[in-house]
Image 1 (cartoon, helix red, strand yellow):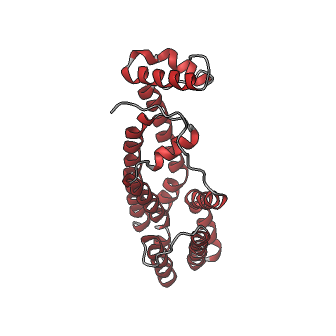
Image 2: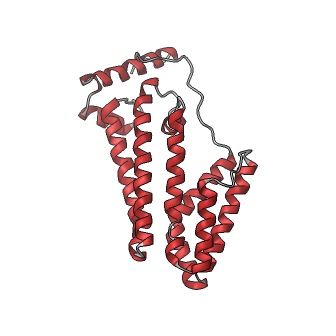
Image 3: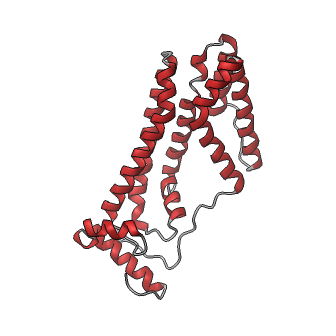
Length: 243
């Protein structure tokens, strides 16, 4: 399919302040959960963790109402949180409350998967948010990248659930803490470098692009020449000198 060169940038995803807050809260829960809940349970008991979990779930329900989104009481997130909190309260077994990060990653993976039904996936939305004039030919790559992240989230949830139910609390704490930072950071770095090599879409004002283009010239590949042509047309439309 030939690449298209729109005269105007595509509409980009502009999150509302509430969506930003909700996303930030979710990120906080994912990354600080191992540390916060460890402190909470150590000082106040396992049931305190169950109560905190229900409070956090109530916050998300409130946020969805404020955003005009429906709340399905029988949805996976609500049933999962309620089940984990109830079992934790009854048994006072720390293993069940450790399942929360696995549930969160399943929720994120399910959302990523749902965007595959749309013309523009979540990864492409992010790409166009960062670079509004991104070309149409990034779409297949963004779709494959979205599938890749879905697989990662599913595997990640399975590993977390296994560590939690097997009672390996220290290993769970390490994996959901600093190891997860390292894994996600490494994936993002590899993806960034691979995209630069694959598309060879270079911006002249970007110091990294200037260095990378010397190592992997755009004119050496068909995809690179396509990127150069797109940039040339865009600059011509904007009345700018050629790159």
